[in-house]
Length: 181
Image (cartoon, rainbow, N blue to C red; front, top):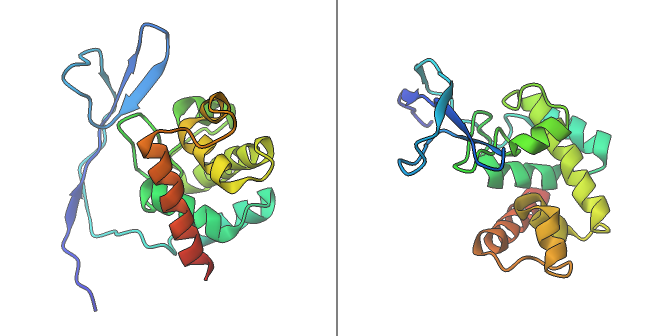
C-alpha cells in the first residue's frame, strides 16, 4: 500500500489584458509582465488527493458517448494536458482537466472551467470540432487542439513545426495506445 503525505495545494490565478485586448490567465505570472492582477485568491488547503487515471471515468464515458470520441483517446488527452488535475492552470492560461484556453471556455459556453464535468464535455466538444475540421485525421486534430486550427492550416494541413506541438501529438498518441490496450 502506498502512503501519501499531505501536500499543500495552493494556486492563486492571475489575469492581465494585453494591448490587443486578449485576456491571459496564469498561476505563475512572470516578473516581466507586471500588468498581471490577482483574479482568484484560492484558500490554502492541505490534501492527500492524488488524481488517478480513473478519477473522472464516468464523465469521460459520458463525453465519449455524447460526442463520438473514443474513451481512451479522451483519457490520453486529459493525461497529457493536466495529468487528471481538475485545478490545473498552464503558464499560457489553459484551464482545468482538458486545459481549455479562455476563448474556448467562452466558445463552448463553459461557466466553470474547473468543474470536471463541464471541462470534459466542453473540451470533448472542441476536440470533436477539430476532428471534423481535419477529416478525422487524428494527428492533425491533436495538433489543432494544442496549437490551434489556424496553425495547422497555415502549415498546409500538417503538424506545425513547433517542438511543443510535435511532442504533444506524440505524447497523446503514446497514452492513447496505452489506455486502448
